[in-house]
Structures are given as C-alpha cells and as structure tokens.
Image 1: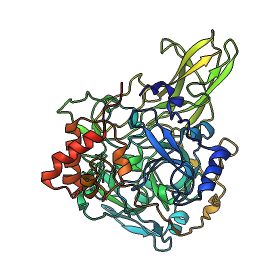
Image 2: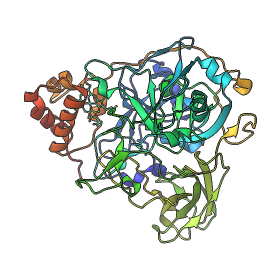
Image 3: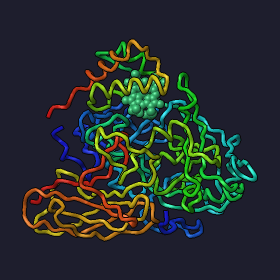
Image 4: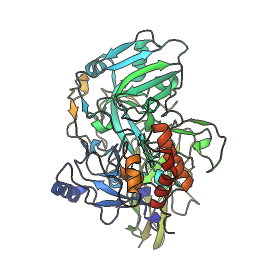
Length: 419
Length: 117
C-alpha cells in the first residue's frame, strides 16, 4: 500500500469517504435509520486489504459508529477519531470482540448467578445484588487491549482479526476485588490457578474443547488490582462488552477479561482448553517475539502488556507552523507496569525529548502527555513517540513478530509538514 | 505485578478530570446499583461469500463467522491458507470434506492476491 505513511497518530488513516464522529456522522446514521442499514461509508485502514465498512450508530446494540471488521460474531473497531477526543473511551465506542456467535443476547438479571467453586473450603454463589452489596466496591482506571490489537501492521502479515490500532480502550472500572471473593470461599492449600467461565455456548458443530474459558495463575487472580467489574465508566457494561459482569485484569491483555462471567473455579491446573493452549500463546522470549519460521520455541500463555504511546493532536498530512511553538499531545500507557516516561523524537529517533505527563489515574490506565515543539525549518517532519514502563520495557522501533500477531507495540509516528 | 495499587476507594470520588461520563450513569455510590435485564438484536447473519470460489466457500466457511472476516484477511502463502482450512476442520469441526481441502486453500489464496508494490 502506498499510503503507509498516512497513519494517523499511528492510528487509522480515514479514507476520503469516511466521516467519523461529530454531527455529520450522526446525521448520516440518522438518515439511514438505526438498525439494519448497510454501512454507507468505508474506512481505509492503513495496510493492504484494509478497506472496511463503517457500521452506522445503532447497527449493533449499544454501539455508535464503529469500524466493521466482522458482523458475526461481532468484531467492531474503535475509529481513531475517538481516541483524539477522549482519554476514557465512551461505552458506545469501545471495541467489541467475540469468538463464537452464540453468546446470549438476553440477560435476565434476576436469574443471573456468579459461582465460586473448585478447590475452596466454602463454595458459594451470588446474585448480582449480593455481589454489589456484600463486597466492598473499588474503582480503577485500566486499559483493555486485545492481544491482537494492531495485527494489521505486523510484518509479515498473519491470519486473525486485522485490527488497526482500535482494539483497545481506557475505562474506569467499578467492581469488587477478585481476591475478596476468593478469600470468602477459602482457597485450599495446593491450589495454583483460577479458571473463569462465562455463559457463552457452542454452536453446532464446534466441539466442547473449543468452549471459551480462561485461566489465571492464582497469584495474578489474587493481585489486588484484579476485579469482577459491574460498571464501565460508571455505567452498566454494554451487552457486547460483557454485561452484566466481566473480569478485569489490569495490565494483562483482554483475552483474560472474561465477559458475562458466571463461574470462578479454583484449580491445580493451568487449563486444557483450546483458548489457553494453543490459542493466545506467545514464544517464551523477550516481548514474545521470534523470527518467522523459527521452530522449537517454548510457547506460553500471553500475559502482561507492553507499553504503548500515541500522538493525537496531529494526524499525518497535517501542517504545523514552522518557527512557531505548538504543543504536541497524545496518550500512553505502561502495560504490565506503570508508565514511566514518554519521549518524542523529531529526527528519526536520533534524539528524544521527555514529554510532560498528565494526571495519573493509576498504574494501568491511560495518561495524557504533552510537549511544546517548534519546527526549526519548513519542510516534512516525522514525529515519533516512545513510552517506557516501570519494569524497564521500552517501545521498539520495529515490533516483534510472532505467529499469532500478538503484542504489537512499535514506536508510532505522524508525518506532518512545517510551513 | 508489583506496581503501586491503582485502586481508589469508591468514596474518593473521581472529581474533575477528563472522565466523560455516559448519560445513563448508574448511581453506584452507596452500593445502590440498579440492575435491568437486557435483550438485544444483532444484525445477523452478515455477509456470505460471493464471486470466485463462493460455491465452495459458503458451505464450508459460513457456519461460524460471516464472510467479511475471511475477505478481510491479508495475502498469505498457499501453505498458510491450507493450514487455516485444516485448523477450521480439525479444531472447530468445520464441514470441510477432505477432498476439498486443497481446492478451498487455492480458492482463498486466489481471492487474496499480493498487494501491488
């Protein structure tokens, strides 16, 4: 594709036909009528075969305009414009990712139960009201990011959901600590893992081993940040994002954030299900990266996220005044540990300047950054942004590769013109 | 996971800041959460395959996901397409007859040509 360099904030380059966000977009969707209208617009994600329809607001329940990666089971991507406007992504524009089309479309909150069982002294179950009332509520900001976010940029390309950068969202989560639930049940000595099941079902002919469930090491489950959440940005979760409750594993990829959570089972086993192994595994190497075609590597379940950072104040193709100070802005997150620093380079990575960081919402949330910048002379400028985290991880110039296309986190850039 | 605890006690409300609250925010203070059942419609079934190879692809590849997903895949080596077809058959029990595996892989390969350099 000739338009690789049109990447907007490392994000989505909007095709000319795309109108995303703002009154124009609402008007267009309104004219089409909510519901079954076919998308009237396309968006060009900046990679080969990256043209996608835009799902108008209301085509999917609880969702505004989204980039339509797949109707069934829904794969909906957040348009880049949304990240330019919001640090906390509104609930109606958070990305959606389901594996199997037969998840429930009706939730009866009176009948809904959460069970805690397995290797525990006192198995118990809770209604939704009991979950809220019996355990202390906590709130935390955290990034939910698909393991395969940005897969479309991975080189060489691999099969899977061909996301741009829109399979992530920062949200404020309200819920109860998982460890409070586990302590209430009394974890038996010798337990090592916790399995999480939901009410997804299999459709014929998918066999039982492909039923979706995930497993966390007990220590990660007992980490004080891990929540069973019942609110996202202080509102109920959209059904497509896991209503009524979902697991929140701050710092780890979203594959563990089980939606429509119904069962928490303490075990002595890392799990045998397809979705723990071989799916969602990475090579046991730094950044989970390997050479294409390399064999014999030990594969382990994907886990903590890497740091990422983005420029939002500019998109490629825009102009900025030469010799005049302007302010560059964006957001960043540390991944598995707190964001440590964000630096910007205007000379292809030869030198870096630290940006100022905005409000700290907690180690696992997004943070705004800004940096005054004055282009020295008219002409093209490539602005790069690089984050590092408390554990010492720094974004690389070129993303690591693995066959799943997971953990993409290369340094992003925008190409602008100083005039 | 030894980063400083990010969890705020609910009482320490998140004053100010960039938090854009949804209009329908529930009152979660004091544990007063109201639960309302949800029932939604999805725009299923979504697109089926059309064009070259559709007669082969629709019966084998439409049960579990709409065709837009497969159509949006990148150019991949023929061997990778064959692995995908076999994965669908062996892992998910896609209705793929053994005699059609190669033809399916070839059809998918042909539908995803290399991008112009």
